[in-house]
Amino acid sequence: MKPEKVRRRLEKALAEGLRIRVWRSKVVDWSDNVYVAAVTDGWVAFESMLGSVLSDGYDLVRLRDITDVHVMDEARQDYWSRVRSEYPRRSPVPDLTRIGTTADALTSASALAPLISVHEERWENEPVWIGRLERVRTKSYWMTPIDPAGRWEEPERFTFKNLTRIGVLDRYAMALAVHGDPRSDPSETEPA
Picture 1: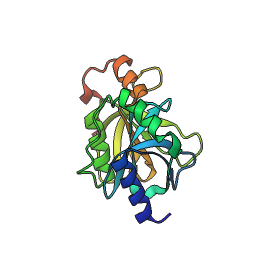
Picture 2: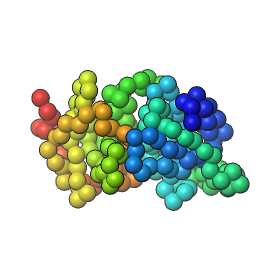
Picture 3: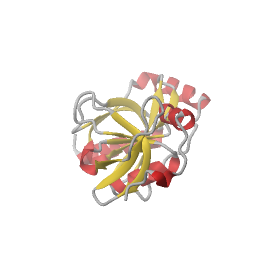
């Protein structure tokens, strides 16, 4: 699908509150049923859904990586709209108005929540990294990951070129933020 058509479909889905399915290039296994929360020239924020009806945070992806967009089951759009009105968003929509770069997307996401998730989906079963953004450089960023048991790991450097998706305000990361090991002084592990 041509980029102009992808953008038109995303903007229509945003304006009409339609649930859509999205496919992206450079990604092994991610097409999801989502709602569009925001569209800019460089990035798109999708509202992720849990169990088809409950909002579960947002995923930020590069607009240029989106290869196809389809409206999901048009006959059920009215049903989803009614259910969604009963379960409103529980978190703010990420402000993408100033996001043009990967650094902007990371910084904006980390301003919304104590933990973000970063995905490198180029390989099958690639792990998601959840943690706190520490520093953003020109072509890379530092993050202090937290493991599934809520234990902090050492800060780690990641590159922009491998980043395919940024997640924020999802229930899993929020639970880790609340119930994971407390951190004393954030500067203790901040990279130089």
